[in-house]
Length: 191
Image 1 (tube, rainbow, N blue to C red):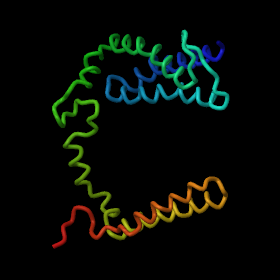
Image 2 (image 1 turned 60 degrees about the vertical axis):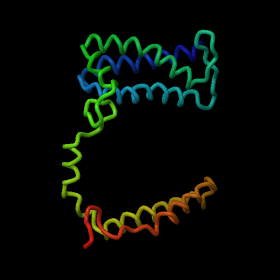
Image 3 (image 1 turned 180 degrees about the horizontal axis):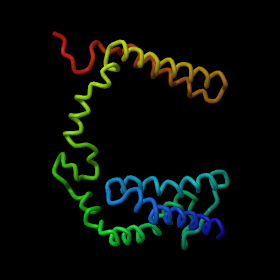
Image 4 (image 1 turned 180 degrees about the vertical axis):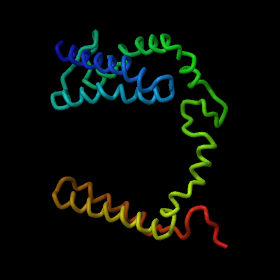
């Protein structure tokens, strides 16, 4: 029972920091960012459980079920966090805004949870000329050759130290991609 209480303790500690400091001070009313940061918040107790229980892999009891450390942590985190999450949304007046993000939105709407950029911001990035130096044929060739050389030496190192024979399969990446060198910079049409 002591392992279960330990997991519950650092779940509660993580949630206390998240809901009393991180979400109110750092995230504010940005519900889309809050949804993405909740993945990180959930990952913290899972990572702590992995550090503590990976080798020993004890059986943890959740009511009448015996679970491994991963499922116990995820289920306990959900059971504890969900009511706190709902109370937080209600107390901050964010319930409608949060749940509206998951409704079916018109195609291309910036209000959808999965919308990452507006048309205006994409056009601005595409018209940005500050990265034109990397769009030249020489720069693309250098980046392609440099990445393949790094993979080649890294694979050779891993293969020579005997870490893993599967590391040699990374050479397939080099064989598949090295003959592909762009003929002209992207966006330019040859006449």
